[in-house]
Length: 429
Image (tube, rainbow, N blue to C red; front, side, top):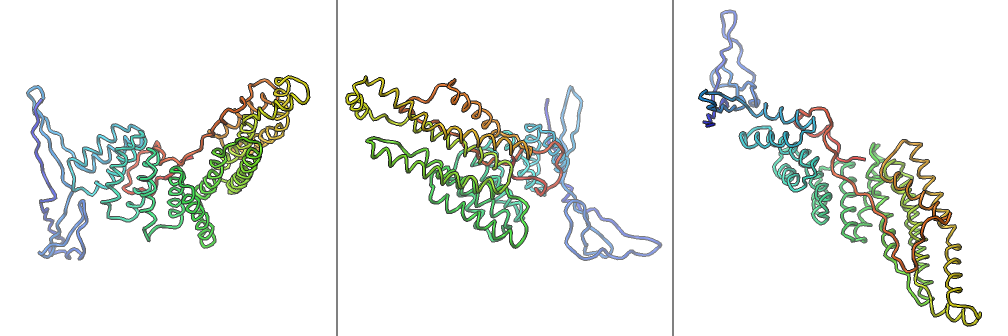
């Protein structure tokens, strides 16, 4: 197959329309700038209107000795790509958007095509190419809202790719703008605080997350904010800071040090618990379920840490010698005593998971945190019944995962033909 490309730029041709009627010249077109894509523009000659149209391409193919012609324009490619995007045919949508960008680099559809191609790459979790598309929109879009939307997606894609430093930098760039609506500013601050948390810069993260909460409370008194997702998220990660510190707090010998370490671990548990409860009180179903799960996980982790703490062998040997019994008898009594002493902690974890599941059922939420609470509840009941192995003394406590705010959800099933992004949410539950 051979092909010859014939470029026909109709925008370079002036189509002259003579306005006449009833035997006399019609009134001249009103003054004003020309409209792109077929609008009328004033001419230097009275009664003459210039119509500027989008360019088209004609491609001639020779197939089996027969000449065939393909005629297309930017609008047609954009519409075809939008239909593929709406039907979640990501690769087809990307190919159509890329062809439009390649064939019509000066079209008015360039920014929307870059943006929607970014959405398709995002849906495929192809963060490298999504980042490239959204960065281009952020740098080139003439409209402030398009720049802002692209920056939010850009920061979220860096977050999904676990490039926390780049994500924090992008949201810092967003926050430097003076034209950011309050709800968007809260989101940008919360996402930046999350990126700082993932970098383990806990001091900066706490300051940033508290700023998000304070801004939301202030803005909500001035104009009702209808999205509490990022308020709850800020509270959640504010709780995750002491939770991480709780996990990292060691329990060490000798006995005096062990007592200090346990006291510090208990204080961190209570701090984290109080902050998770504040997140629950926002009443966002997603973050309430996550926070409820983490409170239960705190108590399970505390139990595992204490049961798995270093054993004071020297002290136990002295006790065995004084009591005239074997060391193994004293060791068994010590381990049994620790587990019995910590039994109320497990019972508390069970009650919390049960309340979390009841809340989730009441509000109709089902997510990964509800599933984990269900699994942990079953495990805790087995431990109390003596049917599941206990953590071995000295074993490291298990680390509970934390939820991450995700990038924008994949496009909905309906075709998207709008040029702007006002129909498209930035977050997903």
